[in-house]
Length: 413
Image 1 (spheres, rainbow, N blue to C red):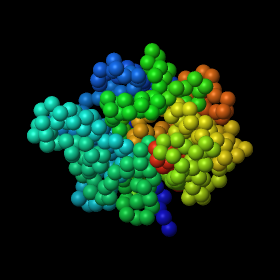
Image 2: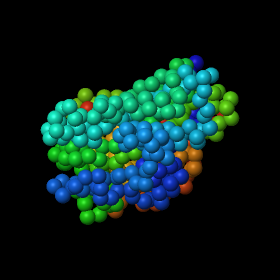
Image 3: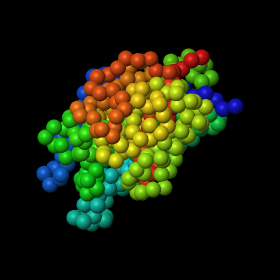
Image 4: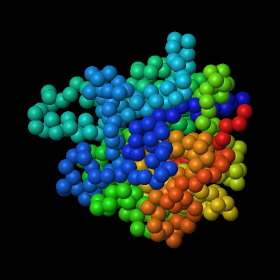
């Protein structure tokens, strides 16, 4: 019989703040973390806005010398993992280190250092490339450094499934515990690619908002006048544990993970199928895997990117799966405040879903001034809502047609 898995620790580094309390308070207050890009000169760019992490000091979480050698995505992940371990009260030593693993999601890794060193090759030659280029660039250095700095020596891997990576990571970590491979896992997602190549690339696809004169209003999921998503950065790391392991430690429990689904669209590199059938199959797989009826879901954290196709297709897929209940389920599109963290989105949004259950508060969807007539569900516009939640779902859908859904529920002994 598979083991029950619970969430016992949370760590967040987001455009809304460093730390769970700061981020959650801003989220529930409907504040935006979107602003002008400060990382590079945007004068030649169509999009000049993003969700940058502010007031983050890596030396607060890492030795100063090591912090200087890390790309932001790595230091964000280690910082969030430290917060999660402290929150969970999880002590790692030689008695349990091999039973505690790390599995995180990351879409692009250290894009900034790749761009920097590409310029160095052009201007100064290949011999001037940093010896830290490769280890600072590769996405699996996030779980690697979490393992090194916190001592978790169990299963260790990185998932690179684009915008679904963080959610896939949590799901796969959940499976590692249910099947007995590990007793506890650090899991979630991370991303930091607010760089010239990233912004230029998404601009070339016409995927990004160009509402540069009002950054805080640029991310508008399910809204009639949405014009694309906003790139965000940060990390959300959770500690998840086998229930008996958590109870033996006397750990506090935020929520239980009880379902995980994944699917492939098999349709297009970047666009979802018009009827959203791939996402619908993914959500249904999560329900079926957890033995849960669609009628039991009380809340959904939507993928909700603020792009034309995603928001319509996700709405259609929710209607397909949830039938007559679709219009009655409160749906949050938290990317309206954080922007889209790409491979890191699933990590922070799983945490938001757990906190919604734990605190009985459904975060709002901001900037929903004029709902799209084709997006006609309850997206909790503008103001957070107090509500008891028994079961909740979090969705993430990525380029290549890769989809992931998680179901969390209120913990009951």
